[in-house]
Length: 84
Image 1 (cartoon, one colour):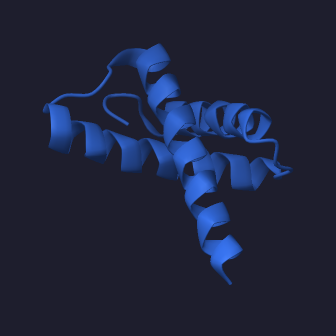
Image 2 (cartoon, rainbow, N blue to C red; image 1 turned 180 degrees about the vertical axis):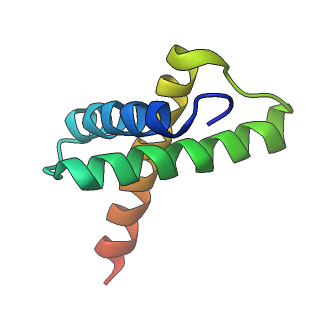
């Protein structure tokens, strides 16, 4: 997450993971929400920079990116689990 810092990343990760948990109707714990939020932000920021050359800035922008990325990760895991 660009220019947010460690504590800000944890806060945004937790909020984004919680939002993704509610959107995707899953039951995760706080630690998993933080992990999903941070990983989701990293993945979607990478995709946005690769495709568009930029990403959303600021706390709100990164919260949106992290929540969407966490939803993407949850969706991907569900797709992999459904194949087995």
